[in-house]
Image 1 (cartoon, rainbow, N blue to C red):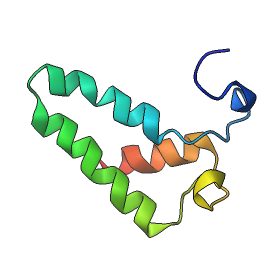
Image 2 (image 1 turned 180 degrees about the vertical axis):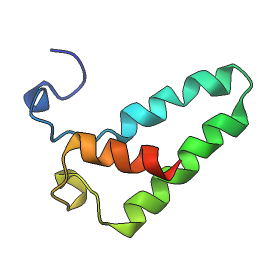
Image 3 (image 1 turned 135 degrees about the vertical axis):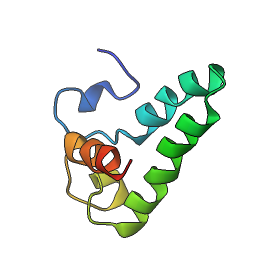
Image 4 (image 1 turned 135 degrees about the horizontal axis):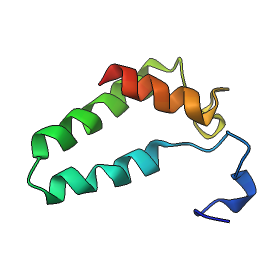
Length: 74
């Protein structure tokens, strides 16, 4: 199983934030700090709002819902 939480694979309950942050490394390496910053700066407000959180952060949202909320905030 891929990833660091094989017990969560395929259940839709994993927190996608670490994977999103990992994806930010590519624009940083390509000298696109502006693009990387745009993604990173949207994560914190989504979490602070608390409406769309995975279980590990005290919510009930699924992985895709959290990812979609962050994408919509960008």
